[in-house]
Amino acid sequence: MSTASSVRPARRSFGKWFADTGWRHVIAIVVSAFAVFPLLYVISASLNPKGTLTGSNRLFSAIGIDSYVRILTDPKNPYPMWFWNTLVIATVTGFVTVFLGALAAYAFSRMRFTGRRVGLVTIVVVQMFPQLLAVVAIFLLMSTLGDWFPAIGLNTHTGLILVYLGGALGVNTYLMYGFFNTLPMELDEAARIDGAGHARIFFTMILPLVAPILAVVALLSFIGTVNEYVIASVMLIDPDKQTLVVGLTKLVANPRYADWSAFSAGAVMAAVPVMVLFLFLQKYIVGGLTAGAVK
Image 1: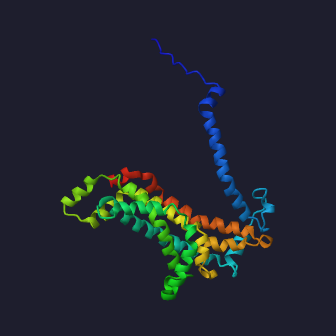
Image 2: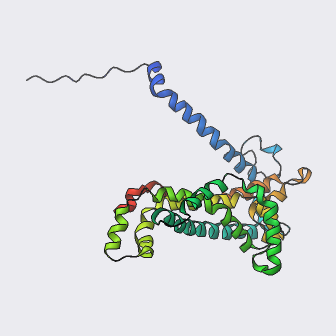
Image 3: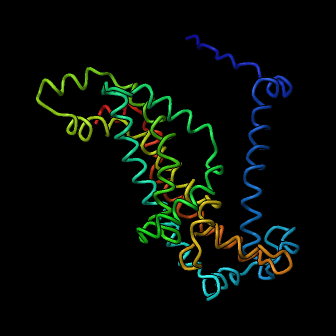
């Protein structure tokens, strides 16, 4: 009885393996280290009880939660109030931006009306100018508007949300408009044959199919609102109404008395909502269009 002998493949040399795939592992390790090191440094600084960065050159050389306790209990710097203000403003801005942007994108993609092309071009042209150029105009506008309607003027969260909506609605609408165009028009035509109107088509058919782009826009809008500083610093004056970025900046505004440890602790806690939102929306982002169509 003859047995078939198995031929083992020739083992590649280290040089051939490195030239083929090894260099990719090296680049991945370097890029990962480059991305992770700042995060580790900030976490190490937040655990440094001395309150300075000079003792944080060695990662985790001193560990303590004094900075977290100090920033959470300091009456001069109401961090819990800043955190709550940022969470409310970012959540409302992200939700309303996604909803209004989806409505506008659906109208531009599915309807034909006078001024449609001009509106699309206007959206693109307006986004060419940075929002920083409009800071003075925004301040004067909201100051005058506050004299007539104090609820949406300066030093109000509602006014700041309205400003954020006006700045982000254009680019998000154009981004969702391109995604809406990938959906076949036959879906709308089949729904109209069954007697469905635009509202039913939009809420029951289109929104489930465009869930990935909605998740991306919501995440980008939330992150952008949390990290925005210039407009928030101009609009919000009272410390109790300020956001995290504006409040934390005051901790290091004076280099001689800067509390970098408390600043790092606040930054670490501020990153938690963004991480939670990203993990929650991850399944929608990676699901793609096919997952929505199957549902």
